[in-house]
Image (cartoon, protein in one colour):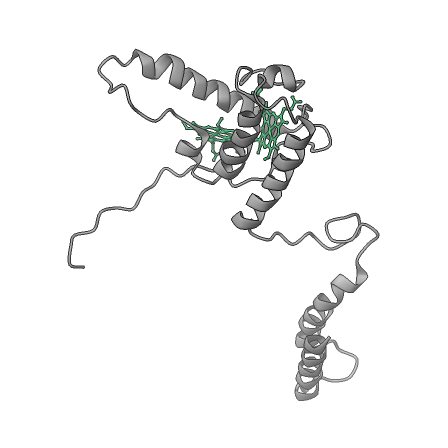
Length: 197
Ligand code: HEC
Ligand code: HEC
């Protein structure tokens, strides 16, 4: 409100200083009025609130990795609770719609969702899941993630194993290896700089 007051004062001052004949609309007043009106917009929020119908656009905060970790851990903990006693059974038999990592123990599967699929991409569970029904495949990101997993399995099980002269002990390709905490993996690196600069 204070800003509105200051802007309004400036607009009035601008009008007062502009020698325009009465009746004609001076240009600074038109532009100034639009600026003065802008800060008042949040007060007219529609029924949906920010991002909702008739409301102002949702403000996009940059994701906070610590907060995301906390949210994901809470989700994993609550799911571990629902499968208590079955953590070591295969994910394919504990969950309804696991088609790829079927043999992985269910507890390990949930931790992988957290560290690889979640933190690896800089996302929380609900970037891919309808969190009231984890087996649901309606979100695009979950469908893409399945194809990423298939690509990764192919690299690890087919492509890399066929490179005969490769050392045996190497880290398997993972979401983290490419994504490094972002949904848009970078194709850049720090260029070495000459010493002493
Ligand atoms: C990048 C997308 C993505 C993120 C983020 C993600 N998941 Fe998943 N989730 C998947 C995919 C894909 C599958 C199926 C995997 C498979 O078939 O092996 C899956 C399967 C599951 C399942 C099995 C559901 C069922 O009944 O079939 C659970 C439970 C689950 N995820 C929990 C989580 C939790 C908890 C988080 C957050 C800590 C999370 N996921 C984050 C993509 C994601
Ligand atoms: C070999 C490298 C590589 C690996 C391994 C990999 N990805 Fe990706 N992924 C990419 C590239 C490249 C893109 C396209 C990035 C873009 O859209 O800018 C991508 C995009 C995605 C997207 C879409 C992101 C968006 O914002 O549209 C999802 C979801 C995803 N990957 C999930 C995964 C998951 C889950 C894993 C592990 C199972 C994984 N990826 C492993 C390279 C990889």
